[in-house]
Amino acid sequence: MKKESLSRRELIKKSIAGTAIIAGAGLVACSKSDKIITESTEAAAPTDTADVSAVEYVSESDQIAQGVKYKEAASEVSESIRVAKGDTPGSEQYCKNCALNVVKEGEEGIGCQLFPGKQVKPEAWCVSWALKG
Image (cartoon, rainbow, N blue to C red; front, side):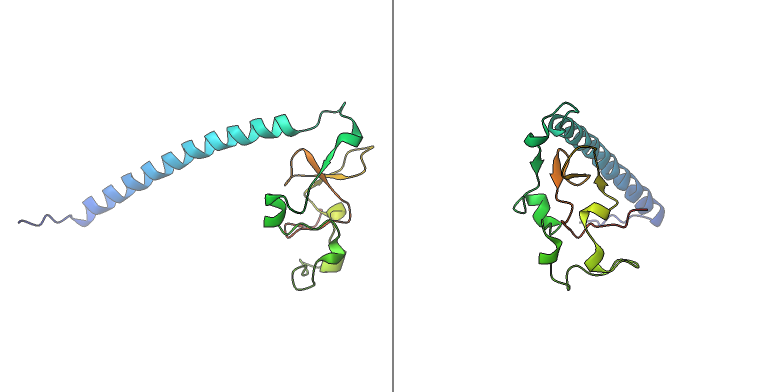
């Protein structure tokens, strides 16, 4: 059997072509998932005329909530998890002062970019907390 060897130039060309194919496939997959996420977000988002009492709050048992260690009462989170971020100690981190919150007039809870169509408690916390700028 004769072994076929590649020159460096041929190897680099084939590597670049393979990488381009993989990247293209990834872009196609991402664009399809973005469309699905957008459609589901639009369907789940409450309208301006929605009844405030019908607003759904995030549950700690929600899969995304568990992934970000969401707790309705920040005081229940241990100090080893709720650590300082920048100049803000963990004890001062709440959904009400997070950069991800979306406050709407007349609503008891706070909307969150992590949980489209649902609300979080003002005194809640998760590991995604970021200082509001």
